[in-house]
Image (cartoon, rainbow over all chains, first blue to last red; front, side, top):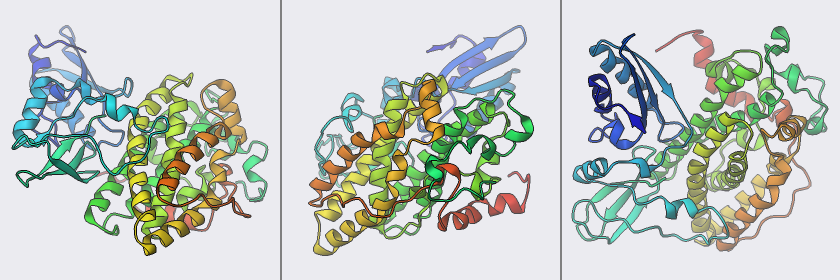
Length: 170
Length: 281
């Protein structure tokens, strides 16, 4: 990803929070793929990629990009790119730490979940190990496969008894 | 416009697909690419099933399932939305996503009958979701090798999502099949009820043959064995068996011939857009 962070307009765009998980910026989340600033024409071409095909936040993110660019005196052209498909592996360490502080378990590495659905893998009513973002215990269970947004699942910690969101690795 | 096509032979009838695209005739062949009809089938499957799944919100057995099926519907809606504008750019009509979703009549839809059937009970939906998501996993795996960059992009994105859908459906089918006597009985009945609508997923109609020859699409028949193998593993784990092929099977969805529930589905899905043409919010 070649985001020109030296430019004030690019910095402003990279600091835009995700509308559904506002503790993490779109740059930390890895959905901001490119910011191409043209100082001659005062235009900026911004490329973003959705977390999920139907992510309803994309329109809000695009309009916020146009707004932030206009604040800096630029006209923004926001483009959506599907390929290569977004993966939670693009999330930055700062983003993962921010999720953790907010009480959302950050996504684990993708490799394990990518393998599922391929080959003759037996079906099991259990999933991978996820640490509780509050007390750190790995004694947690999934209570819902889907959470409040497409990118999250719901779990509960058996040690501190708190329910929490898990950012799913994809 | 396909009123003379009988439901019996329509699935493999000589191509009705070109004239079946409204607007295509008026615009002529300018910029028209033959794979558009194939991609419309894929997009319509996703769109119609998204509509059916969204009916579960407030109707599922538990609130977590309202969320789950709503999220799965949203993924499918996103897949359809990614395809419609692209289809509009290659079928010579220049239509946008709302034109496809909201302004087409029943005979212009190219989805299989499986996705338009009424939702039934929760076991019925899990049987349908198991088969459809297993089909989509095989389909999108194959389409990541398409010669069309847009198709590769949509498939690569969708593949991550539909694997999770398959996982979700699998967990429920196992839980119900290997559950109580009552849940076992109802899961078994659901697998039998969905059976007549499965063969249509694997019919090689003209549009898919053309798309496969161009390298854009894949022959539906080539997906059959992989899909059945995936479903069989889950059904066995659920202490059930796959039902025998039914004497009657659905046909015609890819040619615009639909079953009774389709008109009601479209009426509910489209009536706001049609009652207030051009409205924005």
